[in-house]
Length: 445
Image 1 (cartoon, rainbow, N blue to C red):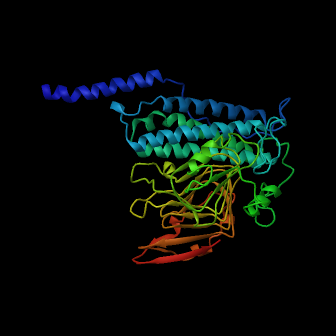
Image 2 (cartoon, rainbow, N blue to C red):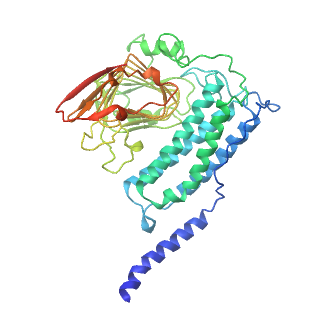
Image 3 (cartoon, one colour):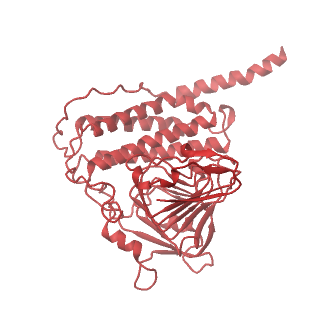
């Protein structure tokens, strides 16, 4: 009898703890919204110059639902009897809070299209704290709402992978957010939004293989030499102490927040063994190195050691308008510790020029929003380019390296620029396993 009581006491405590947690975080969780019936495009409400009142209402409802989910997740106790304390769960919770925060911003940007004073055409690197967008409101809405939709999926996948009760607690609320975002995207795709600035129908690329949102000033900046009379530099990172900082993270942390102008960090040659997290308020940041393979930012986080794939990135970029030139991002976890990201990007209107991405599985995680890669090199073994971003690559190449894997016929014809506006595709569907000792195949984009 005593043995049975001792076994039942922890179960009773767990039940009571869950009850208290649910009561303390009771929020109305409406079931997924049914799709709205198709209707003639409504006219914009008085004082609204961008999107329809119906879409505005959907976005506001979505924002409230996101706040609801974030409240539940942020109050979940890490550790103790509710099951926690492990690195993967804490990583998944941190992922969700960051992702929901990004989604809130993306919804706010979407609603800014209702006001011509806050929504103005801008190029990458030319945004101000009060102006967002490229001038093509339909494209902006699709990018921002699509990015928010990807965020919810990544959050749910991370929580489900932990086996924690938290995934079940927020499952319905996350589904509500997903349903609302899908509804909003459907309204945009169906033309229910009355877009005031959609007269320009330019695609992602416009001349020279570059996207139309990459302005002339930023193109010149990418070509400028370093040194006197060349590229203006705001901070210098050097391992030998000859610069302003000895780590990239320190220079990034010291950069201004929500900067309206380009802030350039020059990273001198060397291997910088650190993880760098460029937060969402670090706008218009630019990293410039001494060359691909010469300036290297190196990390080794990975899924096997307890991190989520999202959190394993050596360098994670969230601030909009990010640019990088002549830098290599690498993850050295190795083939025995898969799902190890070298670079993860959630930066809208971001640019990578003459950059290297080195890793094994999941090297380059183009997670969301609009990204441009020019003259870059990506290497890996499994799914080494993946994500949901609207990404364009020009004159870049990927290297497939493996000990026991071969690539099936036809994949060498992969063209990254054909992936827009669809999501980046995982390479795994076109791969077959064979007993091969060494493989090195170059994929010309």
